[in-house]
Image 1 (cartoon, rainbow, N blue to C red):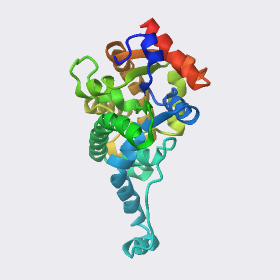
Image 2 (image 1 turned 45 degrees about the horizontal axis):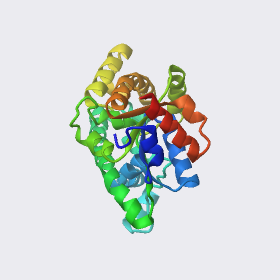
Image 3 (image 1 turned 90 degrees about the horizontal axis):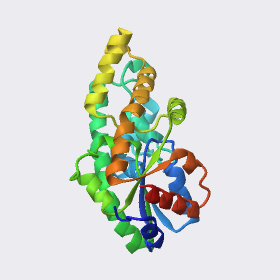
Image 4 (image 1 turned 180 degrees about the vertical axis):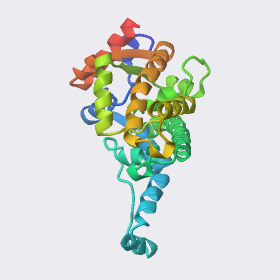
Length: 286
């Protein structure tokens, strides 16, 4: 780790940290605070995915739907209107909408094969965006003069790395340049995250073996054809399984590559100084 002790962390002139864990536990909250109230550059992996790596795919998806409307079709063909994604750090709905959900097309579902193809696109984009973190550390310094840097990673980071491989290229690049901090939730947080996901789905990448197993199990349990699956019901069931699937992966990342803070403690953080204390305490407890 780039900071071995709490003293190293507190004394560092240029602090660099990456928060990871399930979406909804405070990664973006802490990152926004550090950006708005401190002198920190905020790099959002999901924003980078939705703009640099999947922005064109997202916009094309919007245009494909618009082309089904005769009025909009004519305007698009004559370059009379411009359709683009308005993705932000807080609003990742354009990315979630593109990734979609498999099942009954009458309920907004995609064929499972197409859904899997989009998952592969997300995986490639996530790895590229994570590796871009190192370049953005230098960019934040050279362009804007930021010494402190926070990476707000996506919840799917644990799906695209091998935390038990000491030579994992993504984790090696990240841990060589930032302190990896896991925001660990409890069982109570899990239930609340499921409720939040139902209301407002977040971008999710699932390992193909895990996703295929969930799909096969759902079809067998519900005794339903693939094109008759209720997309929302499938996504709810899969997300709940994913939370439990990811917990040991996050734990291994923290054990082998970083430190752990509790989501309950994150919720009590009010200032950048509180964030510094939170991480110092995590280093002392390691």
